[in-house]
Amino acid sequence: KYLHVATSLLRSTAPRQRLLGAKTICSILEEDTNQIIKSREDKISRPRENDDRSSLKQSYPPLLPVAIRCLLDEAILTSHTSSGRILLGIVLRCINSLMILFVHPYHVVFIGQSSYH
Image 1 (spheres, helix red, strand yellow):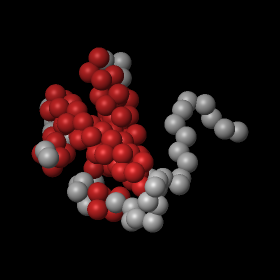
Image 2 (image 1 turned 45 degrees about the horizontal axis):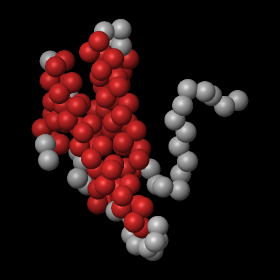
Image 3 (image 1 turned 120 degrees about the vertical axis):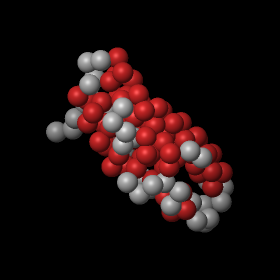
Image 4 (image 1 turned 180 degrees about the vertical axis):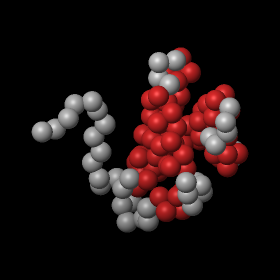
């Protein structure tokens, strides 16, 4: 995988390179998300097997969530431009994939725009 190269592109000063890195990371995360969802569906019939999230965590750079969060700040600031809107969509997809990959399946995560009072 080109994960480490794409992660280094996130630190680039060129916006196009950051966008390319974000697209690459997003596709890798979504591919791994699809695999983990399939494995979780298979484990429904075999619930006593170990959770494979810990081995998956080690394959990602430890500061990837921080880099994605920094990109979110940039995307929000540049959301009035077309490239900023594209980056915002990609970053939100990355955050969603990270949550699916690393949040325990028994935790409930609400993703939406309404707030609870």
